[in-house]
Length: 254
Length: 338
Image (cartoon, rainbow over the protein chains, first blue to last red):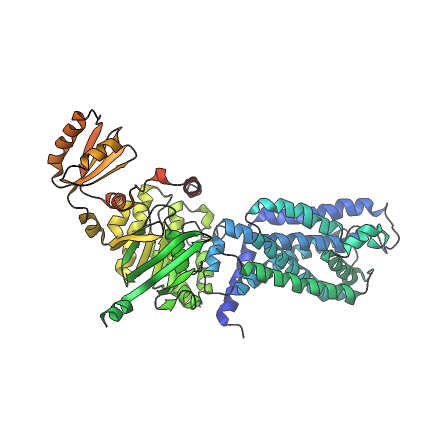
């Protein structure tokens, strides 16, 4: 039984993430900008030229789930990494000496980060609609649930990474050598079935691959592997990253 | 029996607390009893172990050995109760700058389990105490350094703690803001009777606000008393002689019977004597006859600086601050301007 105090603390920690997100206008615009250009330029530009085997429908529609996954990935990891900023600006100490559980602090942050990532995801889906992508709306609840799972998993991964880092200097490294490869290998931009064996092999250890697969199934009704398989792997990744976040964040000494 | 009575009145009781970092013993078996309602100052040079000691008392660091009770709760085994009993103002800023003053306080209140309508009532009350009532809706980013400090103090009071910890509450602030902050701290003691444990290296300020002071050096408490008694313990007057040969003059004056103490430091010689007015000419004559140049002399009643020098053999000035520390001060001063 979770105490009432922990629940209110979680609620207000969640609210804090939202306030910070909506107050930073540049962050919102920045987070929408990149996916917009991907869709509007890459998607429409290559639409006519590309019709690859293993791909039903047009290219723009094909990359829409991939770009959605990208938005969730970037938004979530960045939210998780704010643990580092909290440390740098001293606020982390305030939460660490409060009589609340560390797990509540993580849950508050994860829910807050996931909420902001999902908001960005929904805006991005709106843009895709405006560009003429046809999606199946019957499974919108499933899409929402998947967005939630993916976001929580990657916020947790961000928290886990941030708990290991001393300051913001390493962030660029994480961005270039973890987040970008994760996105490019996820099969969001091209069908993995036709990729070279080595690329395909690596993509199978990329958790985002399963995120893209499930989203593509829910949005377009197509996927290269069974939905339940990719969904299962996704849940496994969620549990692993949550555990890592709880363990590593729990070890932080203020 | 008397011992137990005394123990019961300690709102903060430290018994042989030790903290080791590898081979380094940062805090060496400290014993301390802070009474309810007093302002207790911990003075010491940087690296003396003040912050480490406080970190253990506020449960952010685990002691290597020893025991401490805060408000009767064990710092190792009753962490949540300790945390509810204390308010903390850290040496470094710890506010969320993106949030408003109100939002910072609201978040704090919820983490300490204060629900509505009590929450709003207390927020209004604490900001009034520190004079920030009209700034509640402003984002903290727009606050000056002094206002941030006051907001942190207000936040520390929100859950009605028994003990308020203030780690260098005035570091990096300008003199006027500093005296302003001390004014609020004295008011707290008077109006709320709250127990305050603070560290500072501004000696005059410690002198004017603290009921009792402990001087800590190399992880140990080397003197503990009221500021008055500490100063009186030196006896008589303090003479400071500025000379290029402080060391040599020090050796010479130590042979004089009426010099109670002599310490050479940073090109100066500080002596404790009775009847300082009469001693000065004698010392100048002594210096002259030994061909030691004397640039200036001054006479004063002992200050806490002198007490500090007496016990530690050095002064506690800004120039003694480590590069890291001065970076911190500069950073805070810079942030305070915004």
